[in-house]
Image (cartoon, rainbow, N blue to C red):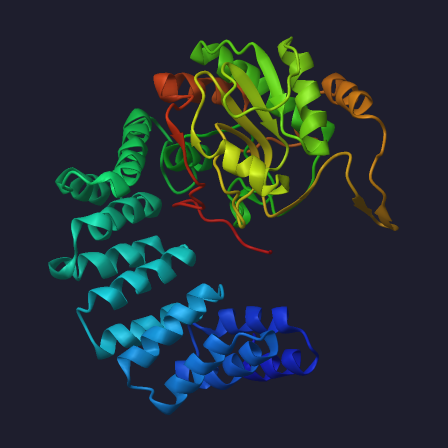
Amino acid sequence: MTDLHTVDERLDAGDLYGAVRALRGLADGAPLVDLLAPLRRAAEAAGFDDLAGAATAVRERPQDPQALYDLGYACIERNIAPLAVAALTEADRRAPGQRTIIVELVAALERCDRYAEAVAVLVGNDGVLADWPDRYLVAVNAVQAGDLDTARRYASALSTPDGDWAHAARRVQGMLARAAALQGQPGRLDGRDLRGWHFVLNGAILATVSPYGFDEGMTGRYAFLQDSMGSCRRTLDRLTGALRAAGSTPSTVSPLPDRSSRILGIAAANVLGLPVVPFAAERTDTVIVAYDLNDSDEQTLRALWGERAPGAVLVEQASCWTDPPAVAADLTGLLHQVAHAPWGERLTVDGRTPPDDRPEEELAAELVAAAPGPDDDIAPGDSDADFAAFVRAVGADWPGTGARDRVFSPGPVRSSRFA
């Protein structure tokens, strides 16, 4: 078990990342006052003067709500949300009912995927909340916690938002509409229905549910993955089925500019029998293909954000659920923590093998010729028949229209984190 001595050892060794990770792990159990000295030391090593100063202030004034709030805010800014939760919880205890503290505490809980706790904090302080964004946050966090009754109750009581919050209103309404399409079906929207909740939260169909460690904490997501041609081919086959079921008739395939996306895009064009064209955000009736959206540059992601062109469908093969991309795809191949493309650098018992530098067209042809599917096992509820039934169930709710949104992850289905 990590203790404060371990944090000091890692700082002594110059392992700043390891020290901060250890501090995150201690935030729920150790008294906040005991974490302040190593936190300040880590902040000073990283050059985070604001965080170091905030830790010093709380050490000097441990009962001061403002000092605790400032520390929580600085921890959120520096991506140490578990410590932010500890500081802001104490600030809320010292100065209950302060909206500024409450909203910041909710932001910290969201970053820790503690959605039910965020709902409890907000509902417990309903008297000081505004509709926008506060009660909206109740609704959207309740969806992510799997509490659809609370989400519907709060969403239905929201006032009409002004322009700044209109997109958020459409977001939560869309989530609840997608949930309504699936609720009541056997096995849907329970704590193991990764595909169902991925659709509710993101409007995206998940092509593959991982079988590895499904009942040992992974629940359909991959931890470390060396992707295969067969896995990519399976995504393309399931994309074909989803498009057919939706009556969607794209006329082109638009790979994103990075090499992996171009390889997958050329293969998709061959499978779908469509021409390849350059990616353009305004292009209609096209399948936009990404291997991993986190590999895309900022300009490409900005182009994907916002209103969809009519008939445009965004496909991503390997999506990182612990570091979600800036924009949600319409169809996600699989969810991972760390993934290597089939043609990328590979890990073997003898070390690492270099990337496959064959031409993109040759690799795409190999992908098209691959036998679709996982190498050996199939997760519960992930047969071809299961996938087809899911696509029929979502019906007219896929693919989405209007503005693309960010990725909401992980939702009510929990998976163990290793990265």
